Image 1 (cartoon, rainbow, N blue to C red):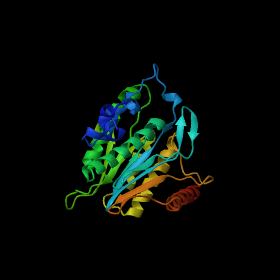
Image 2 (image 1 turned 90 degrees about the horizontal axis):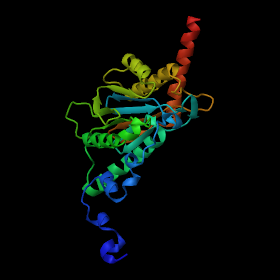
Image 3 (image 1 turned 90 degrees about the vertical axis):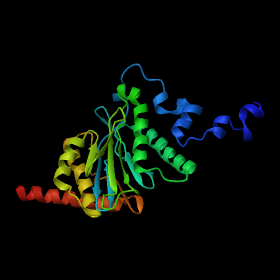
Length: 281
């Protein structure tokens, strides 16, 4: 290969001359086959053959936003994993939770993390929260073909808005549909197979201005209620000591809560429910 065709230092021109800040667009030019939405689709629906992640919950609190997810992945009527991770830090100021085809969803999260990091390196600044939400919508839209074959990915996105107006809540939540529709939620949201039951719980336990500790209990309790009625959502596993993964995003950035802290909240909920059952008995 000649120096002219490869460009300076052995790199092709695409690596040296492209000025856009989107890593996804760059990948679409240099290696489009690596994008999830550009791959050859199966001829028949294959959703039942792929592990699926289920319930994700997010709530705002006084100073930021929390997001939590249960640990179960299902494949048809089988439990394919008991300790899958469904909530990730997208960057220093935002988090993303996955529901749907687990393999594609995790790959999309990793690509999204690189997308945000690439933008920061090229532009020298953090993308706005609205910009992050819109970028994720475009990636989901690119997966529409696979979604129609049963490999849908429907994430939940939340973050701390560094540009929030004075007096406005800095914690914001965005939900999506399989076509890439982007909707900002107010106060709380849930996606996944147990979302109906989780939202019913959130309606009763969430209120504006919750403290961080109260919001953590609200998230864990909503996941507990979802697991009580949805077989695809995993409840607190006190034998294996597996509990929901919860992230907090506030003025200090995105932080995963320690397992011991979440376990203590889950144990308290289980104890309260057990005591209530005993009193009724």
